[in-house]
Length: 424
Image (cartoon, rainbow, N blue to C red; front, side, top):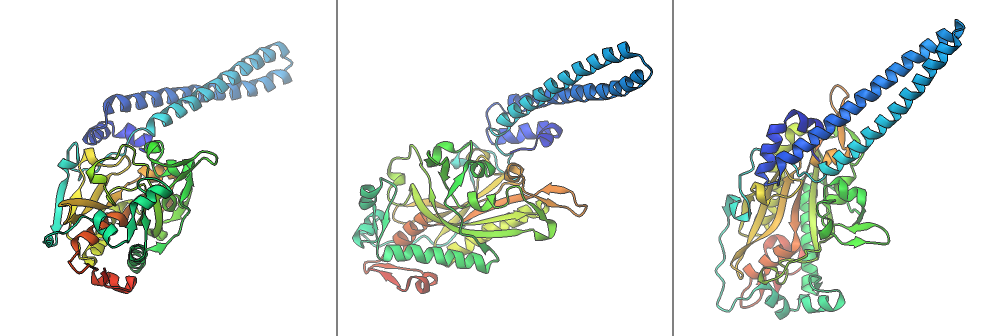
């Protein structure tokens, strides 16, 4: 959530940057927020004036009573009572305006960094780097949804029977490959200095609000009505919320956490060939990296986190590219996002496998996640997170790119984790 003081002090800049994100009616909404806050400030001043006058009159009342001027004292007491009623009404007005401002603020996305390119859709994203040779497959090569059936490693139809579309069942070497990738990603994160967390996979409303999933993505999350809990869309939500309402010491920064969780997304309205097989699921596995950092270092750390995910793709010997997302393709809370995509040889297209984002103070303002600076004053930290990595499309690319007529040959880095070199 944007800070109100920042909006007031940088109105034109905020509007300009929100327009870069294609936020509708940015100028109107920002002006409305400032006007409402002006009304709140006016009510606060009036309440303070009433309180000050009532306090002054209280002192006069005592003096008049001691002087025997009872009638005058009673008139002043009546005025004091009026002032106290006015003060209460003005304080209630303040609180009501604060609620109304808050209700609007939570609908305003984060302002994008000045590094974000202009654009309206994914077609306008900037390709930062493309690396790796795209494999040339043998005649008769298949997409992963056919390979998984051929080798009996993932059963999509059984998933439909048990739950519904988008909930696959991993079997045999497919299940072992999942487990191997999770352990491989976690070991790499721990070696890079991340502290492993195994969080709950359901969260309360406060947690969803803290990281910006609510109210923005409410329709994309699975909701448990009886308990008012949400299935997590990513480990980012519970792991980042560990630091909700926490004041850290400056020397504790940066805090580096990683965690594996299943993730759940409703993905309403997703149909067609681009969502076949593992391309888009309602339940999938992912290892997430999260950092809480000093504001002065967050963009350097964003690059560090990006390179961590890049290193995983190199280890897996997958052709990949890095995209810097344009304003129109960014998430609600991000200030700058890089996407990583791997090449799918059988599908002849790029598949997104990671997003690495800097949220600056957008999440920490909601979370009230702060650190004490050298003067002991609480300051908002910056939060960042990234996929390192999401499994489904990684598995799709591994299966498709490494298929041979004898079977699917796994990259060397995974063999010690899987216990086998080939799926056949």
